[in-house]
Length: 465
Ligand code: URP
Ligand code: ZN
Ligand code: ZN
Ligand code: ZN
Image (cartoon, rainbow, N blue to C red):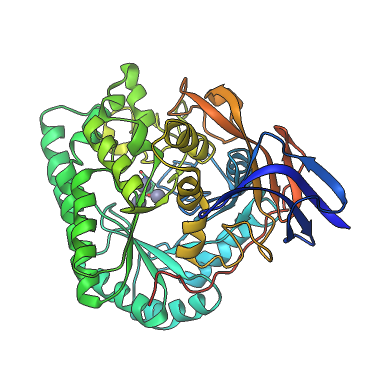
């Protein structure tokens, strides 16, 4: 007897699409085949796709972002939104404040998350203060405890590292076997351009995009990859927005470097013109790097198709729009430079790629699974996730490929007050979501409880030698 059997579905993995029943016991997949014996619970998936639950390896939850600015999602609303979008695991960040120990940062985020999560969660670190003791003592201990990746920033006043610090953190990654993720934008160039725009009185949201042009990202991508080559360490280039940065990744790979590329829905679906909205509405689309234009969207689609990108993540970083602690904070109304950076998208990530990618024939269903689950698990060392095979965690999303929806924020579950994709029509939606063998969403209805999602320690990245 199984705890749960999912019958008659079309199962898709990163390798294959096949018809099979899935037998689940004690939270794991224990049998695949035809005509499985009975389960205590049974789901009929006739006409549906059964996919590995989505893994979103780039989300920001409960992260502080400056005075009187509040992120719109905590671990409850953020993981609930992820769940309804077909995800069973998210990787948020533990942000180290300057002067703070990494261990303390990790402890605080665990306290924030405890008992609240609707999906599994596994933390990356953000290193903002790479002192010798942080890199030499704290990091090795945290990597051994399963925090096997960290992000560093080349932009943002309080987070950016200089080249010497980037080299030191990359070297620490090499020694500890952690995987480095880099946010590539040249902060000094951005500041120079912000100065010019403010002097000219150009302070509207659109100026955010104009002060972070492609060259700012291309230069930093080139520099990050060069520094990684010098240290001899693999890197993840996160949230890539354009063809020139993509070419930097291609060139580094041709030199023999190991590089993982990540892109996000905003670079496939939005443009800088979205920042031009009336009445400061453009603030809804302020994120970094900024959305570009149609040609760069096409370059990002090509990158997904040909394998420059292994990862497609949301970079969910939600702020409310109509809120003095959000996009329209008092200073944010006076200049683009005070609009908090980031947009919501954890719930719409998968339906957008399913509809625009799979349904429109740009990518295959196995490629969709690789880009949204399997590659995230392999890249970040989630051993039992991202696939449908015997012994894997029973983390599954059952998709109705016929369901047509118009994206409306009112139907979503995050804590923001808008969606950047309002009005977008999509085909295909995850209607039932199973986490560790527990049905969490059943035909669009929440049946799971907060706290079902747990923290997952990770092993070494499979990208590393
Ligand atoms: O604008 C963005 N992407 N904010 C989130 C933080 C980051 O840089 O990923
Ligand atoms: Zn970033
Ligand atoms: Zn970002
Ligand atoms: Zn981010």
